[in-house]
Length: 207
Length: 98
Image 1: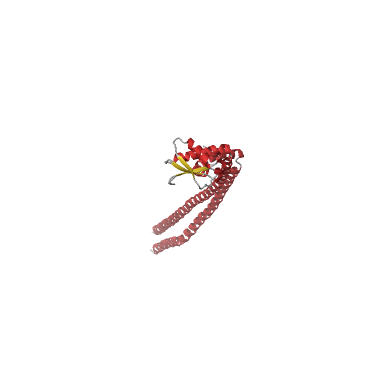
Image 2 (image 1 turned 90 degrees about the vertical axis):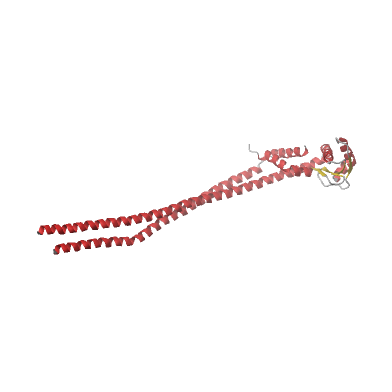
């Protein structure tokens, strides 16, 4: 009888120990689960911080690099423009020299007058020249020589008002409605883009 | 009979003690989670600051490289030979007077 009772008591204690163990195990598992979940959540946030940082860094580097590239481009362009300005100034000086060289300039002036006359769609025209050209070559003689070279006969008179130019002529119709500027300055202005392109090709073309 | 009652009582106490132990552990969870979270985020923030500083350094290095290359390019313009300049002027004059 006593042995059976002891066995019963032992069973009761054994069962409750097992229950307690089970409850503890379950409780610990739940705690570990919630900690794991929280850790995963925090890691996710940390990962997002990392990814955002990478994007931010890439953007910062790109921004810095493109700012510097832009600065470099502008500096190079400014330096290039200075070189081009120098060359264009030299071109202008050469044009002045050219206009003082009678043997080369007179035929050019004559050609300019003929071109201007030819471009005016009327029979009579006015020719304006610079004061120095009028003095050097005699205006009427130039006009006469130009008329002789015209493919179609026209009449021309000298404009009373001399023009200010390095060289060349301005031809207008008698009624002043049509004006053809054949001065070196006008040609320089008209051809500036083409000239700069040609000059750039020679100066800056990579080898 | 008395022994059985005592055994029942003891087992009840055992369960209660386990519940109490678990309950105490549960109470500590928010603190543990908070500390752990703080630590993880602090590490991430430290890493972020380090990465940003590295990027700042890298950007500055690249910018410096670009600037020095640009300086070299600009300097190369002042080394254009007189011959080339003369050639360019002559070509421009040739176009203008043609």
